Image 1 (cartoon, rainbow, N blue to C red):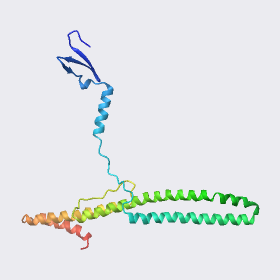
Image 2: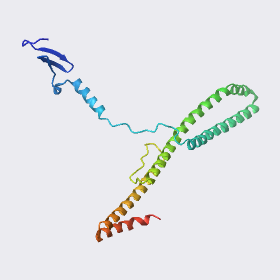
Image 3: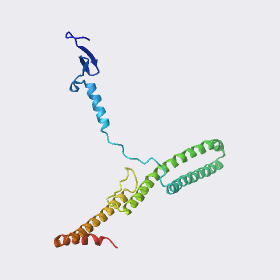
Length: 222
């Protein structure tokens, strides 16, 4: 489109721009339409989104422990199925022997036996999957505590354990963090006492630090 003054008008996504001397004059961002403003807000909001929290993706973290846990659940459920099945067969057989006219019922049960077996196999597969997930909720925190103990043993007393929501052993997490915090407090007081001794005579400061250490140290056995 050409204006009366000879300048060209170009259509832009957010409005019209005037082409003056070959240089496009773009519209003011403050005058963008609602659609452009919404698009810009969504883009900025996506860029400002915090990174996703780290999630454990490996189901079998401590294989030996988890296999034992899964085997315990698997064979417990299988034993329950076998006991129930044998009890049901014995009961039906007894009733049929006492009532011969129910013999067709026993034949129907025998015909459905393969279907029952297939269903039991399907149930056991589901039980195995559930046992793997449950064992992961237990083995994951144990693995985390092992790594945290190694980190603290290397001297990092600022390290803390934070388990995922839904994990087991959350009480142990709190006790572990309290323990490391108490040890960290003792080390800080000791460092302050040593700094006071190296810094020259400061009776009041040294006495205060010694009193604090005396207050904390009875909690520990050396």
